Length: 113
Length: 113
Image (cartoon, rainbow over all chains, first blue to last red; front, side, top):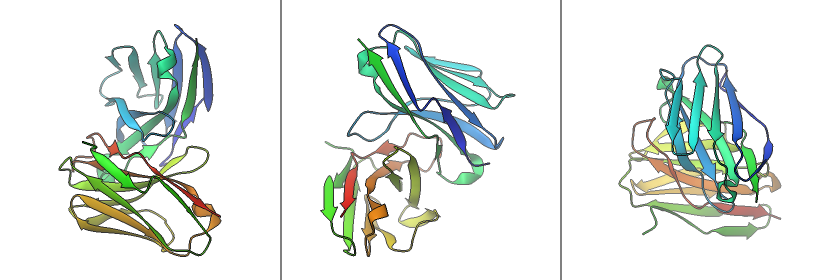
């Protein structure tokens, strides 16, 4: 119930292509869904976040699509660049959880030049 | 000016030893966290402090003891280190709002031999 399931575990995309990472959750009490980006040797950093009252949020080349009825959300990276190569984590939090964030298992993204 | 700093960056030690990791933040945030990231990149919260008060304490062996001497510092002391404690430990901070960004430190790679 407290899990966020993320797929794929790893992803290789050609430069200029679209990278898509999917996440799913069970607990309908989750009401805030951030995505974090982590480069090797660094700590995770917030990339983009969405609330379930909107179906899509776009920031530059990064878009979150949210399907509340299916309890699924995904990150799309348009025109993927080698600098986007990193590990991406979806996450979720709920009102009753204090400041606790539940992270997905991560997707290692490699963009081939 | 580093927003969230951790010391040391690397820690190599023998089984059975006691060690500490220190975290300091200059963002003025009142909530601080410790996360453990294992070799598969899975990121899991261990503890959270708000204004020096423990608010999240996940299922963590009691060999791990966090201490918050003031709002800007959160240290992690580990007794009787075991091989399974080898991981990267991240400190993070945020405001009290659970939907605000968590800012992660650079991590401390702990290796137990």
